[in-house]
Length: 390
Ligand code: PMP
Image (cartoon, rainbow, N blue to C red; front, top):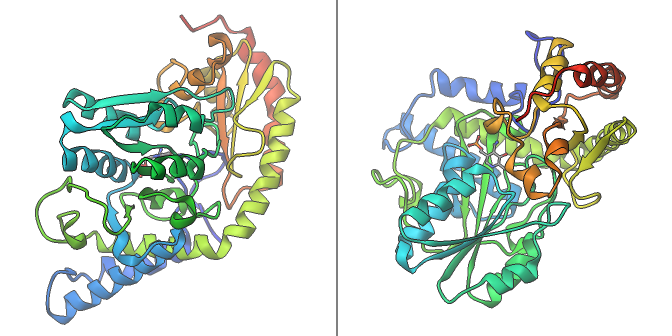
């Protein structure tokens, strides 16, 4: 299968985004051409578009064990997270709302919480342990009479730790509190079922799983009170106004079906490659592997190197044709260690030398071995540079 004919090099940044699967691209193509109808139209152009959106909705719902009417298409996980958090805040009124979240959440959760705080809501951000886990007992102790929502991510995008979402959801349910989970990095790569997890709201994004950018979804359990973010048309059962991006939604549907069909194979293969990479990295001088040793995503390895800074390492790797990341793509470009690595309690000098390698369906053992062979030389050259951090 031809994934990326136009570019060369080794791409190990699949947690930032993935290439669009050729099958996804092929399924989208007619909807960028002759199938251009608006799903809201009554005529047969509209009916064809409506049928395609409905079919994609069934596929995305099935990926997480939801009912199709519980899926709201969004522009991505950022919007889904905002819609979940602010939707609860506006449904109850900021002054009557307390939110609980964790220090290692993506900015797309932390920032809407901060915005809610500026609007008058109360927010508790819980710490994590050295592996990135929140303590469900700490969640229990943080619950107040006005706690409306707990937002706790499923798979961490920087360190790969899988959060205790089911345990926290059980605590929340006992107190009548809603639970949202950001499953952007885990859906379609680890088995995930909204009923088993016990969550009320769950965010997804297509482009992390070989679908197109600009589309995602929010699972909203039937009966959950949520104020829409986008007021306008009555699309998405009145939960999100705006003409549906039909080509992107069709692509998301196919990507979701492919992810479900390949989940077991992908997880096993990526798990082996990750272990190989993590073992090789751990053997390098002054290296520390971050994240939980067993409760973790199959495709992500975070490593911190003593006496090295992430940016120099990334640039040196890029010169060798290797694409990695210092953490989440959204915070790269800054020399500050990411809030996730800081929350683990790493000493600043170690946190400053953090790299994230994330593996995907096209990754091969030869690519992993090539990167491991390059790193001793790259580390030695970077460690000779004058320190760049403050
Ligand atoms: N949450 C997590 C955990 C992510 O990794 C990302 C992507 N970096 C997002 C949310 C944002 O997703 P999107 O790009 O679809 O807005």
